[in-house]
Amino acid sequence: MKTVGQILKKARLEKNYSIDQLSSLTKIDGKYIQSIEEDRYDQLPSETFAKGFIRNLSLRLERNPDDLVAIFRRDFKIPTPGQGKILRTHHHFIPTSFFTSQVALFSLGIIVFVGYLIFQFRAILTPPRLEILRPISGSVLVSPVDIEGNTSPDSTVTINQDTTTKPDPSGHFLTRINLPVGDTNLEIKSTNRFSRTSTQTIPITVVSQ
Image 1 (tube, helix red, strand yellow):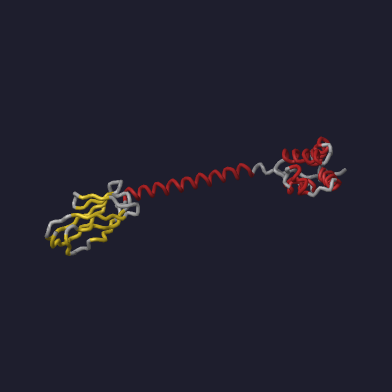
Image 2: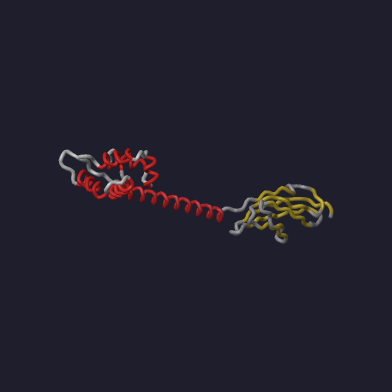
């Protein structure tokens, strides 16, 4: 008695179809068609898929699908001792693969979330950077005096508690203030949006206005 695979392969060859051509006509992956022709049902996703593939192939190759499904059931659903094959499906692997993917996505989400929290806490707890480019400590200058430096873009810079300026998007700031003649200390303070501050004191001498 011929097997389903032998019958379908003979029918395919009679129509001069290659496996690729038959795959294109039936929308069944060529590797599954080859497995059916070789009676290797353990290579198919499940018994239900196997029956569906056999029916589609039978109709395309002008064979009775009910007859071929019956042969399939005879040979593989209830095999006789020492003969036939037991159909193995991959159902057990689908949940494992699914849950593994879900766990991986969940873990990635946790990592991203924790990274975001760390970044936010660091921004809250860390004072803004403050670099003064001009004037340098101990300078002898003429008023008005240029105050230039770099800080975080979200900060406000306060000079001697009465003059404020905002940095540009890169964090650079530049302002000019009038100072009285004599020795003085410039207190320059940068305050970010979390009210964290950095302060520098620059002693200078103003000789004239």
